[in-house]
Amino acid sequence: MSTTESGWSTADYVRLEEKYGARIYAPLDIVIERASGSWVHDVEGRKYLDCLSGYSAMNFGHSHPKLLRAAHEQLEKVTLTSRAFRNAELPGFLAELCTTFGYEMALPMNTGAEAVETAIKAARKWGYEVKGVAADQAEIIVCSNNFHGRTIAVVGMSSEEAYKRNFGPFAPGFRMVPFGDVEALQQAITPNTVGFLFEPIQGEGGVIVPPDGYLQQVEQVCRQNKILLIADEIQVGLGRTGYRLAVEHEGVRPDLVILGKSLGGGIVPLSAVLADRNVLGLFNPGDHGSTFSGNPLAAAVGRAVLELLNEDDLYTGVKQSGAVLMEELRNMQAPLIRDIRGRGLMIGIELSESARPYCEELASEGVLCKETHDTVLRITPPLTVEREQLSWLTERVHKVLTM
Image (tube, one colour):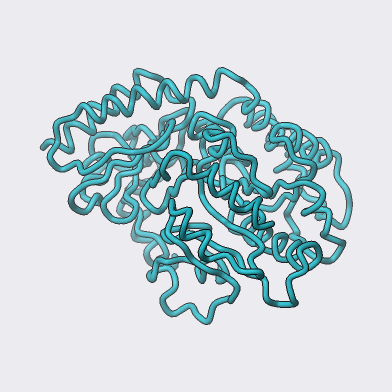
């Protein structure tokens, strides 16, 4: 086995990580050393097309020059002030964030899970102070097969037992309904219901796309019952499906939008909750906070990301590339494939058996992707991926799935 200039091989890095790292992941044994655009290189010089994009955190690819420039310039000024003081980057970022998505206020955080927890707190506070729900009785309806993060409150509202095993007790106040079932949502509503939290497309759940019209119907149900519509756009938003937000596919405007992952450009953790003043305006000093939230480095990178998101040709390109990729994949004659689904450049290939061995085979062919829900190959390349690279990808997927 070849080695890096340091004399370390892939096996050396794996052994060191296995010895000292808590095993909360089961990664492919690819040790990435550098990356640019849609490509990554391992410590032994092999090159791979990145078709996971950091779970969509790398929507604009690796080392995008505009994002690197914004980070470098801010690194030479100031990186952290905490929210005990103001900084010169945050106000502009908040203004541009609200203008881009059409909301009155934004609350920045760091990780997606933090933003989900923030949205839950905001919805409950609104429920008590505006809707008039009795103290400690607020309920939020969630969907089965959801994935909103890994904190105790969030895993407690998951239907995946593996996420919850030996981590209880969990926070109360959540009801669960099947994803895509409007009637089940209506039946679950009580006078204590303050919000409906959902993903427009369930990414970790296996790239599950709801029936056409579902988003519009749940919006209508929430309006009729004075319930906050809360969209988790952490993985599917910011251009991934060919729209700024995936809910725009059906022209829906949630009361709260949760952003994360690629909002930080794959450079820094950055998330946010967007809402109008009637919701986020209820927060007072001391109600919520985080040392790194709104830090100037993240705000500077976030502003550069928003500039990229405001380029209209981005969305046309994603829609066209996604349509071509979906068509090429669906034209493959592979009995192993049970279904191919998705929108834009978020595609799931459901197999009739475990997808992990095929991820490993694809890696040997120079393609990096990851299985989800055991049988689904998730294909989410950077939104900047070139058409020829997608054809190259399709050839290798075809080779591996028809071996």
